[in-house]
Length: 290
Image (cartoon, rainbow, N blue to C red; front, side, top):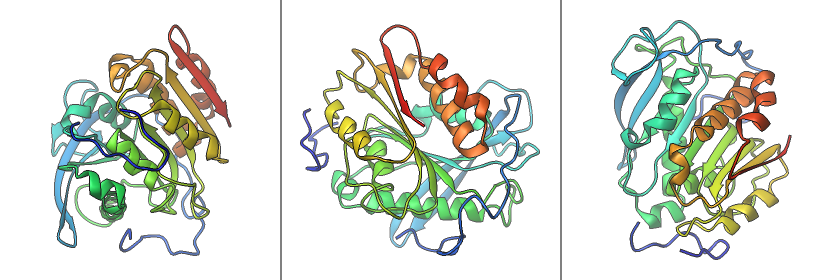
């Protein structure tokens, strides 16, 4: 469906709370970046029944686990040795974390803790910022897992956080860069989103957009406007002829997102340098201002 700029998504189908970083603390200086993992991990998952006030924020936290890489995430698997950054993923309308494992598993296997909330998405709450604020609370709760429990000592709490999401989840992601900013965000990946507002002066993030240029649900032109407004390091991956979800089956999609996350969260310059090649080939266009 065609989107007008900042009329925000309206389809008939289809306050972060406590922060672990003080307002004056500079992200990226509290803890050093760990070296990027050189081999993939098995993936574990734990479920947390969190809330923000009366709002349910049920979250599946995926993470690098011990065991043989590949296969399905293992519930409550022991966490792998290491200290890992956070990279959230928020699903779209009518979906779930379990339906988004093609990207969640790729991130967790590459060395990220991936909080993936399950939302019974309400379009009003996405457009008025409630869901973006829910994700901010989920990020706070995930950071707090570093202090006790099975993930204690395995989360890098000092370099900021990454966020990503598809469709409504992409709008939630863009909202955290704009109208409902979370200053902890240093990397973002809105997928198939629409423009949610002007970039916030309180956020400094590297942002990768992914979109099909034949998307009839969330207008490509709206995402392009959002991209054009950003002055931070940024990139745009266009799937030419792609629809709202057609690129999900294209392996260039998770490879590029993982490259982006590894560069922006681990400082992996080799991953940055791979981006043009991993985002190349037929029916694809890569643009960047890094």
